[in-house]
Length: 371
Ligand SMILES: [Zn+2]
Ligand SMILES: [Zn+2]
Image (cartoon, rainbow, N blue to C red; front, side, top):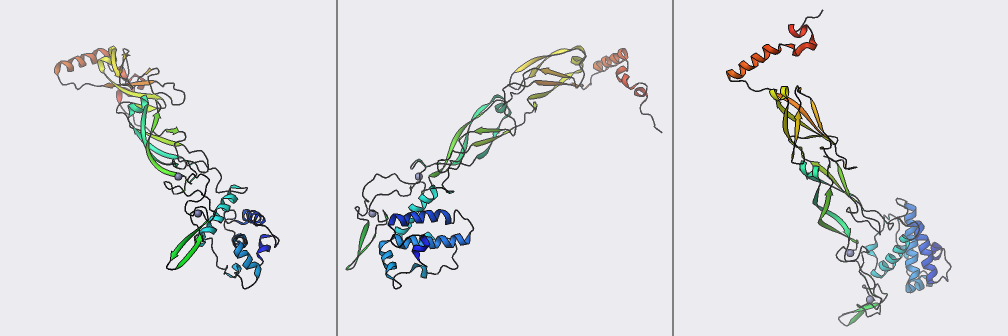
């Protein structure tokens, strides 16, 4: 396998030409761009090995010298599954990593494209009165946010200048006994220049998980199961993408008296027999905690409804309020004393049994058998 042929370059190619050829081929054959394509993976491996050999002047000259020199293609490539970059030397990993970043920000990039953050969903329990009047609640939310230390870049900020670890030489020396070893500086990757390192607080991810209270405005009239959207309070986006939204689902506790139907509220009002017959003025509770005076007209029947306009719940869409619908329910008194019994008998004698008039004859005689 001719490494120059693999990269499609001439034997006299310059370093710039090698890099250019590698970038061009990496864009086509990188496994991230060809997921699951085994042939592309093998091809990419060859391209990578050719590049690594030819970009290193020492290894390139040994390769050019002939078969006694290092032959990367002699390494087994069969049974190869995926890539393990950790086995590479620090200097190669750096070179590759930087190049790799360049590849993926270019055309065909997938991993570095701006991505909107995920939405967050949470629930909040509300008392009936809170949902009716509206409330501001602090919701404790755990979400991924852009790292404050690195502003989402995942790297430390560096000022241009020589590497502090090697004083700009690109190499570090270590002494073992009488032997002095020189190796490529791991801090700068042998470049001798300061380079960004992964941000420590976020481990290079550019995001950190934070738990904090988020004030959420629950609009007046929010219904049970209704969602409130808090824009931008979901997870942070990646690669400059916008954050997701926070959705709060309201769980509104039922009220012992008021039942909601649409934006109308229903209330059952017990009225006494004399109130129903003679008419009355009754105080009824209203959902805002106050009360309203209702005129019950004479002759009110059980089940009859009265409507107090715009005393119901507000619509979260347009703020218009529904009605408060009051249903009269006749409550018969427990008649225990003789005086009350006598009055009711007297009442019956005067008014007769005409309450079942709509039934006609059957109303008086009970059920009839059918053939
Ligand atoms: Zn960070
Ligand atoms: Zn250094």
